[in-house]
Length: 414
Image (cartoon, rainbow, N blue to C red; front, top):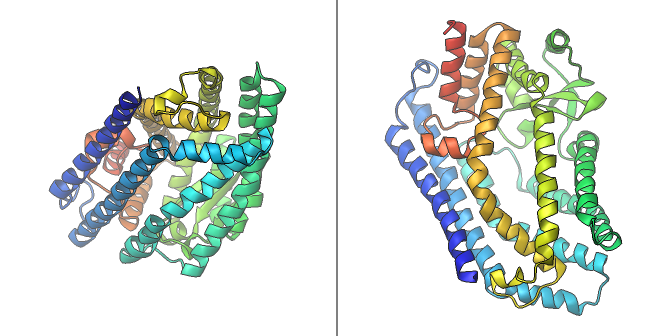
């Protein structure tokens, strides 16, 4: 049985690497061509730089994926999980304390092993293409903050989940599911006020009249936001973005200062109209409900599999603690959820198309959003030539060339 599981895992890796290879070959073949409708907006030098950046990022991602996959195989099938599980048992901790320590030690270990890739990506690749604005000291400070934050934000809900497992051995899966959903909602409320300010500085918009225009546009849709702010993203990166955060009355509009520097006011409004489309179409709410339903199904399946005597044998272990069984379950989940990746990507792209149409109808000028997408793709060196199969499998947004073409077709009434 372990051989079959390894073969399934390797098959998943082979498909992923194959798609990555196709994407790179496609970019090497067509990356020098300026897409139709982008003439005069992107020059050959920028297009060549875009291809080089996409290939460089892809190479780092591929090497990291190979490393992580080998590490996972060694840990799960090479005896390290069994050794770690036995070592934890020797500590003689209570069930709850054992669960917290078991995973709390694994989290920073994985972070430390990935550090070389993060450092290379940030200070070699991003530096080479002019995106990295972080000093090494700031990078270290962010890493330390993240590690420190992970302790309470993991320990508290994990401890509560393990307590529920002890308190309700027959129905814990339902209570744990409620805990997961409740904690996720709590984090959406707390993150803008507790976590994000630890890494970024938020302040009122500096573009004259923009906040008034944003609020006027939101009034047309019947939506409201508590604050409209800009964030000093340029302190860390040259990439640009805009987003809504929070829930209920805590919702706020956040724009990267890099975005404000790159786009004209009508283009910024068009980008925000797209984000408003997600809210008006209730895409975020629907995704949250879908994720909650998936979590319920996962928790129900987990309680059955965790009791199954044959679970440790799938990875060549004779016995395993509850927590080692959880690790095995997470490993198996990665294999069996991989085939549904393109399904989630399909529905995400559908939502993005709906948001684009909403932005066109609300803002009234498709060229503003099309122009913003072209500028953002140029400034972010986005891949303009993804392989169609790779995009269908992984892309949460339609390729930018397709989005621009659709927007201009909307304007032409096609």
